[in-house]
Length: 400
Image 1 (cartoon, rainbow, N blue to C red):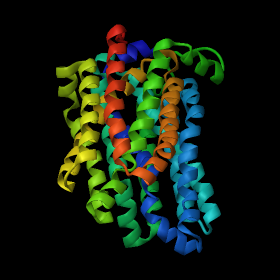
Image 2: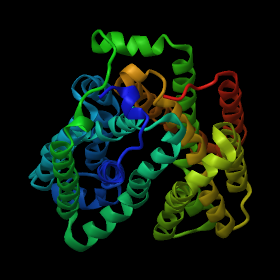
Image 3: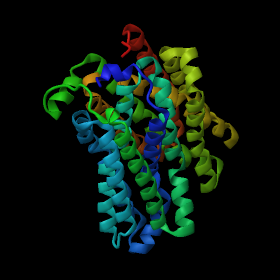
Image 4: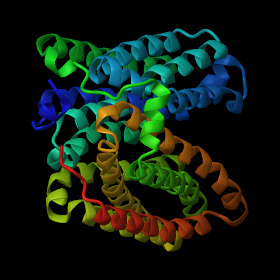
């Protein structure tokens, strides 16, 4: 079946659910070790800083190897690569649970990042191939349920399970989720082989496909905006928990709950996305999303108490996904014949933006507190969104 023919239909709901389950595990894996570093340091007799190598290597692999998975998905089929990635990530998580040294754990976490990084961008690319553009944003929002819940609960799940059953139990749970998603996807593809076939794809090598995407002005616009969004937003939001702890004296448990409210806001967006897309359209979602982000960070900078800050974080989650989900939707249309490669570039630029934004913001926070970076985000993010809204208005996105 050609991409154009498939894209005229809606993707079956059960496939979206399975992809969302896989995305939950992939997203939760990003933050699941954060509350367990003390346990790891005690078990392996190292400092907490040394134990953090297990997190660092996962994130490094997660950001870099996505470039490999995108072209593989374009060549061999996105859904098969996602299913294989689930099973491979499950094996790596099981190996992490059996690790007998920090070096072994760091190695298995690196391999988990290599395998798990295929899941989210290729799932989005598959939805781009199989859902018409007019339905795509609402469908992507449904898929985002798993990713949002994973980011929201990853640290909490790691902390709770680690405290109750030990850090190894966390990896066994993730192993189980990956296995369920992977086996179910293989079963679905066996019953429906048409959904597993690769679509029409660009000719040439992986490098030439990537360069082909980058030569398109609209693709460059999207990639630039998502890199700046990732750098400024995550570079600033990373320090919200520190700000709440130092400014309002919240306990670490309360800080964790407050920061999780961002995921709650994202979940509210997911639940209302169909109506918001219909009422506001892409242009309106970008404008309102950017303006809401500006308001959220301004309120965080001047919040008189933790309750007001909590409300700003919820608003931040809603409006971030209004903007980011629109960027994702347009990302699926950057290069329809090479969606895997295009979404891999999209994910890489988001990761690179985050990797640059946090260390740039850190010394400012150390010296002046978080308020200056919150004010910067309050001004910059609306301007970025307004620029993207202007670019959207200039370019009529074709339905496919």
